[in-house]
Length: 235
Image (cartoon, rainbow, N blue to C red; front, top):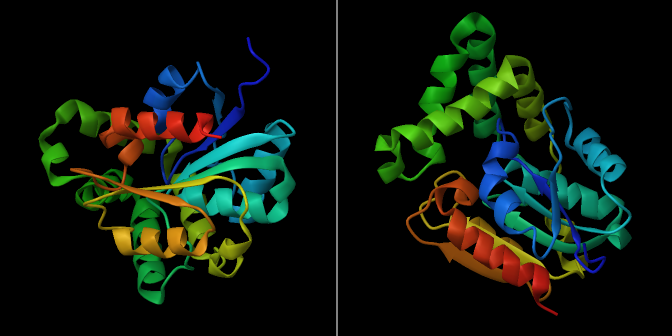
């Protein structure tokens, strides 16, 4: 094992787990040492970032999708000297809107009422590309992750997202090589939000992924893995 391979911390979105990054875990081992940090036990972005910093080695690259992106940006704020590279996938730097917070609280209330299965199924059309909705194996994989996270984890993660800070003021201070990836058909965090981040981060590379919704690492895994391989090996 080469000591030159960077450690790669992969952070899932809400309410997902390590299976989100299955392709990257299987195919980036030649250029990095990847590991997923699970976040569902934490109820704030700050606590999630602290967990990452406890579990990660001294220096590492970090990639976060959706909620994982919020956590990656918090990690960078807390310990910029430890982060060698940053990848932000289908996420954004803004705080939650009042409308989004209200929607999240309604969904959590339904989940607590025993309707979690209904809640996660209702979320699918906004999470994945329309063409993927007919892919039964893919849908089962997404739902299985959500079921493993469960109602308690779902509620904690929603609370963390609701209370996240505005990360935009710190973007200009980021100095590590940064990759920004967005599904072209991501309706939850559209391309414009990624353009905002990439424009603010010095030297950031923005790449839209075609025929792809919010879960790019799963929906177009080969494309995402190829981009991440380049990001990890580029000088």
